[in-house]
Image (cartoon, rainbow, N blue to C red):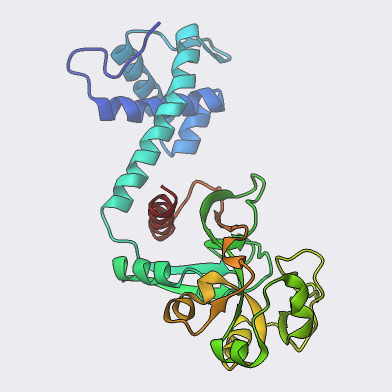
Length: 304
């Protein structure tokens, strides 16, 4: 039996949807009294609403007896499809409410400790949505978004295996770089093996305590300096103190103005993917939805 709202001449769609919600409550509670208790109305009012729905549909939905109520075949169909209709109506109402106002409030983001990551994109988002305040937490730690109250996270590597919703973003490459002044004094390495005779600046993870590997195979990498800051390594390299391996997104300006030069063909290395992650719950705030939308636009523009 095909059922649509409204079926009878003069029927009202909104009234039918409201009556449908009452019918679903009756089906779930098993009685008019139980539905009335949940809805805060009398059992007789519930009975009238169900009767009105049956009239609108032209079908009996419930078999009534002195002891219990039972769904008819038509009632089972209305219950199944009606639940989906109510879910869709709720989603439509939420979407219209979000569309009716500009996003505002606090948006908390967790980001990897990579200098320059997302700076241009975050600035563009704030310019587009000035009522949204950003709180940025830079850490290698994989924060628990829900438990720690974050709206979303930018992470390096892979997605979250289905636990969170995810969006692939443009990535970055790790470049081996040095300042022209350093190369003028110490010479430019043409093959990885020649790095053994140079001053190398390394990164140690504050979480794991391990040195970050360079995108080179079987090369001897001496340690002139070790630190856990992208900014510190960048400053030492710019001052001609050695060679470092840095994310290209952290040194865009320096590469463009020539104050740093890529070495050993590292600019053609493997791209490391960035991911946007956010909770999969349905109650997405307007500000988070706006942020995800901006990230989708950026990813589409970059990756086409």
